[in-house]
Image 1 (cartoon, rainbow, N blue to C red):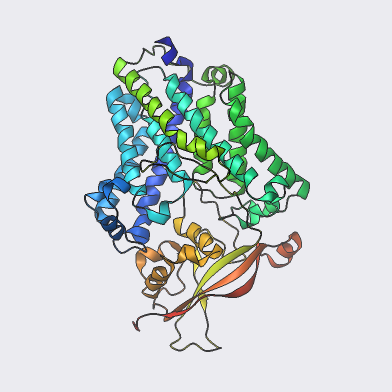
Image 2 (image 1 turned 180 degrees about the vertical axis):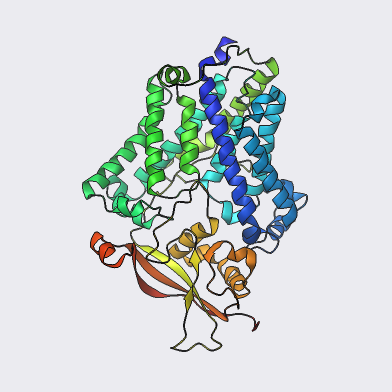
Length: 478
């Protein structure tokens, strides 16, 4: 069937598959390095407790049959190795059916992790990777021409990502309509990057241009992704440039990177090949077998049915952000920063080895890898790697309710100098002997001005706000 295949899209398929495989590698490595202290057997919110109370139908996962930290590590590293092999081209070296099985395995393995990850995995980019990973199963490989239907499903996905984010902003905080949100956002976003200080100090007219450009990119440009070429390619280019701007201005895990990868589905590969020094397209791209065509059409029908709930959400005045309407994380709704905080508060954990707390007690501060702490430390770039504990600390500063399930367990483990937990942090101020007491203080942070930076060398200025958690005494291990 000629309508089924898009031979000129071979380059888009190649970039989509290799790009998604790289994101899978990052996601699995992140899980392998962080899951155990966060949600492992002795984690802050233990997965075994979660699994005992949640049935398979509510959280389908391989770990419903067995969970141990060792088994989890095997699953995470297997996923990372498998994804790395796909990124290197292994799936194209396999028969079509085997290639589909590899992509299915990646999706099942990561779904198994997300569905037991609890609050640590309650981010839109987890569902976005799973939805994109499911569609990748039906992209085929070098044995056949890329299926047009699957490419359109990818375009539909990136449309919902962009349009959903645009609508939630327009309907949400009035500063988006007044074009003033970005006077605050670069400073108050969850995890600023090394250039965020400079973005914050752009002239106010440029902040208004940023906000206006965001509305155009997310509310208008997505419709052009469905238009004939070369319009769709130019629309995809606008999406990619906008996402690169976001990459430069902050740390949002792999959200921006995967959105750029998805936008490639709308790019005319033949057009690029004529203007860029790219390899020649495959000489022979036969039609897909009938069984594959039937599977692709079945997947498209499933997406069409499941799209009812995200579309209804988009049209609703009570639009929700980043929600999955099914436990398989297929055809989700997306969005970000429907409201923007004006003031940045940070929780600072401090410990002391003093047996008794007095006015003269010396408190030493724990330093996190990504979230602001030391005012002289320039924010680092971590994305597309995701620092899950650092992000939750930002939410906890907004409201103690966010931290209720895990902050006290975190402090208990720091009072014991728990090795896996400490590896989530940048520094341990008590490398030899555990502290006797730990407290949580809250500070107001703001970026310094140009003059303050030159005078003090500090990127942040902070002032104490008050007590977040009174001192907690640890076991007497001294």
